[in-house]
View 1 (cartoon, rainbow, N blue to C red):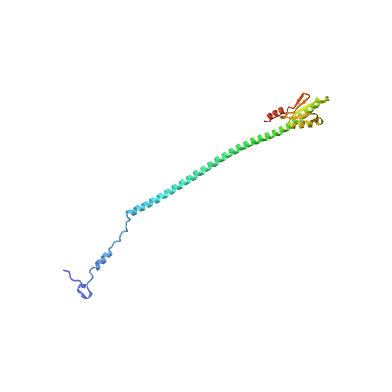
View 2 (cartoon, helix red, strand yellow):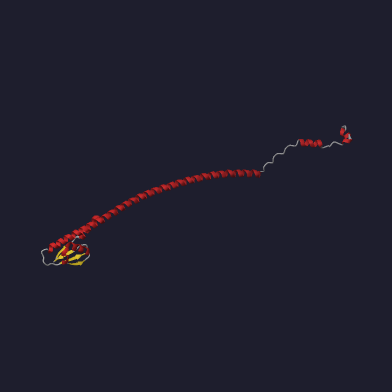
Length: 206
């Protein structure tokens, strides 16, 4: 049997607390608690978020590359369109200039032909009337009485009157359509050939 401790014998000091040493010993050896482990759901959410972020990054890069390719293709198409337009415009301009030159040349030639034809016709008309007037004078020069009948357009009749001068009052005139004057002196017929000349001139100037 163990001997009683000194504190048990000395009543004035009271008994020793029985659990003090045990409590102190338990507190001295308490191990730190481990951090809480994430649940399976949290791990899955984190992996899904990482995968989504990686996918968004890849999609953004692919979209940017696709847009760049589309821009380059569009730029190439625009360049091709402008090149084609330039070639077409150049060919069209050259063609139109050629047509314009031909048209201007034809118009100039036509105008020159008309001017020349008009000049030649007027000159021929003048000479024809002078020749006809000389023929009339020669036919009536030695005659005391004669009858002169003239048929034809008014314009040629007036030209013949000017060419005959004072002898213009000795004949009758009947206006008739056509390009020539016919003069009958006592049955002898004198006639201009302006219509034939006009036809030949028109063929030459065409």
